[in-house]
Length: 192
Image (cartoon, rainbow, N blue to C red; front, side, top):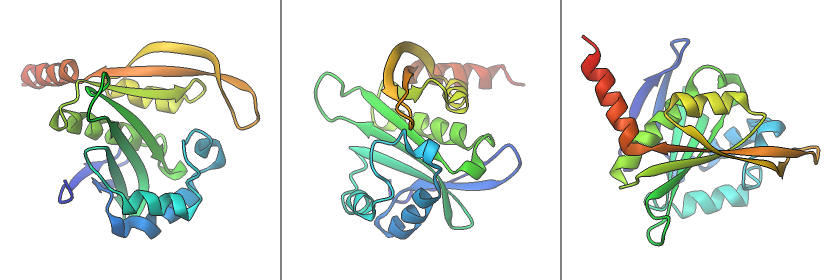
């Protein structure tokens, strides 16, 4: 997986490189997460502004446990999508997807590009379904996951708190990997 590298194009024509995180990305990741807005950072599970957190990530890469996919423009990280997996147990067929996009690249199709690539990679990891937990008041994230083939499966009212301590709803979205692949295949066959 380390050698995986792919190019994508955003809605405005910006060319983006997609590739797995490697140990040498430490400083780039610190820079990226220092630029993530506070309102976006509140939804992350770790204190990404702590260099020790980044050190733990880059020093313990295991692509079969967490596959971190980075998006770059001009050698600068602009997006991060992670696919979290389990090797055993009753959820071993599920992958959890998390995405962070730099503010200046939001609403340009980068989130959808990253989610689509993670969904493609899910097959290689033997996953059947992908799951994402999304803050109710994040319409851009909801739209990106929907465009990538995810559907709303549950809404948990007042389960999470926003940065101001207010209760908010969390939405769980799920993508059936095989059904998504079949839909894409059918679209491709229907296109002349």
